[in-house]
Each structure stands twice: as structure tokens, then as C-alpha cells.
Length: 147
Image 1 (cartoon, one colour):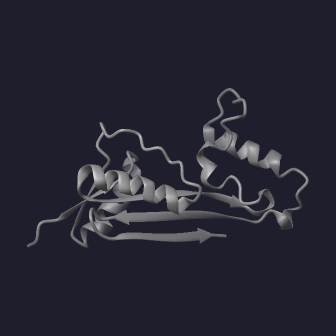
Image 2: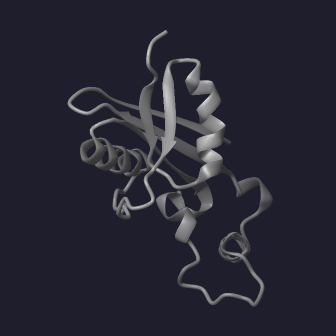
């Protein structure tokens, strides 16, 4: 039996780690989350691909093991592709309503921005990109969208 290869997911989200641990174990990977003391990685790319690579490269280079990272968000055609890479922080410039979650505030802003846009023009997609970086080696980026 071969020793599993370590794969660090560039996230502290234990849900993501649980989702990928079993499927990737079948391919010989020991999937682990980002160490708690790992510094925050600034996602300053302009595309989902760039942000995923920024995170995966930072982890792979710092820890010397294979690293995978994702970035995802909503692209609304009537808003020129917004919120795009800013999906998670889309409504940071909006006042919060008491008891409202960040996701609820993002949705509220989105609906206000779409006021007056007819239903047939409210097309959008959820896009996700995932990058795998092997130190000193290969980089793989995959992308998918759900219309």
C-alpha cells in the first residue's frame, strides 16, 4: 500500500474539506485544511481563475506540498457580469439590516440593482474555478458554470 500524498485545500471551511476528503482519498490523497496559523491570503485577482491560482500558489510555495484552491461567484448579465469576483463582498458598501446575514444583504442589493430589468433579461450563472498547484511542477485550472 502506498502512502497517501498530502493535499492542502486553501480554505479553513471544514465543509469543503469533508466534501473532498473521501472522493480524493480514492486517488491516494490525504486532504487537509489550511493550517490555523497560515496567514490570510489576499485575493486580488480580477478573475476567478487568478484568485484560485493566487491561493493555491501561496499555500504550495509556503508548505511545499500540493495545494488546491477555489474561487466562485455569481455573474449577472444585466449587471455586466457583476458581482463576479466580488460576490462574497458585494454588499460591503451597503448598510446592514438588523438580523440580516451577509448573504441576505448581498441578495437584497442584487434585487435592488435589478429593479426595472425584465425577468427574461435576468440571466446569470454561478461560476466556480479550482486550481491545483504542485510545488516546482504543474498547475491545473478547471472552471465550470451553472446557468
